[in-house]
Image 1 (cartoon, rainbow, N blue to C red):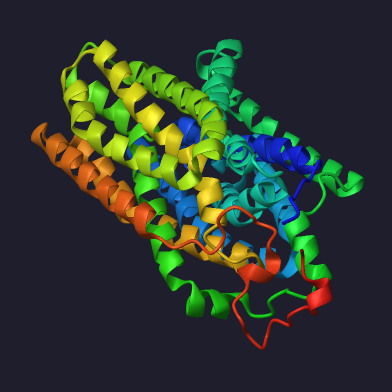
Image 2: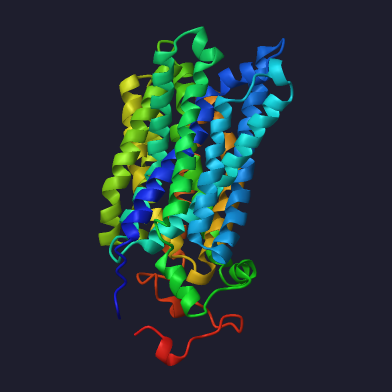
Length: 450
């Protein structure tokens, strides 16, 4: 069979890395400045109330993220991978508005409504990452580099976290004290202008090009007019499986890089503060990023399923030691715990893009990935709430969390081992990816790939 070699695939990889990094930078930046933003855009006689409302607006992104996956996935199959990816980048650039949004004292309710609107656009953009960018990058990659290129795209998540922490630190160093709380916190938001510049440049230059898989679908008449109904009718098992992996993956990410570690560290030892916890999170993100980059080529060599299965089993084995290290009340032990989770999560992050994209037929791939990841993001709200509750609960609750992590990760391992994937190695075998359906005209024998 003729091998698929796309010399343009590297363009999608680097474009995806830059865009995903900046999109997640925007999301994490809000979490880093939420207290200050609550005081500026929602001032009142009760600072605790303003802080609570600011935190609730953070939930807007979580709510709109599944919507971005569902709508973006459907549009990906109807419009194309590249146009939806550019829309996501343009929506993410709305974070720049935070840099110019007037305070509550000047414009009243317009200020909090503006913050909510920005958070909604962030949720839509982040939700569309998987069905647009991940599908686009993996499909554009040459043979033997599907996992590597997909891993580079996903490396944007820890890279965005590190970039956000670095930008906040620089802003606090350049504009210290009350000036940072007054206006200095707005400076990092200006980096979102780079997202708008990326979208405009790509729109004008036409680079990176569209996925060659989609081009071949269009050329041979294999496009699907009703991708959602087709996915729900023929690929519901894959949707459930990928949604399960997404829920568990989000739970691990929240444990590592949400407010869980700083909150727990601050509560378990009076000598350690929030900053110590944040530094540990940054260290874990660096380990995560390095593991993703190294594990991509390994997954190409061994197979995405094998590496993803190993990562779930490795994390399951590390769950209880992770809890033990955290409860030891030693900063060195906390860093060791972050190494365990950073390596395990990085292995899964590297293998998951190619595994997920290969779980759905080419003509309905965007819809399948969007529905599955969106459903997983929505279901993950419950697990995330349980994780945050464990951070402030009694010490014994941590062991319950560790046991829950172990069971969930073992379930994920079973899903990875048993889930059927219609696409194994040749992601461009378009005719072989489609089920027989009168809605999908089949090319003549002479038009079929050799």
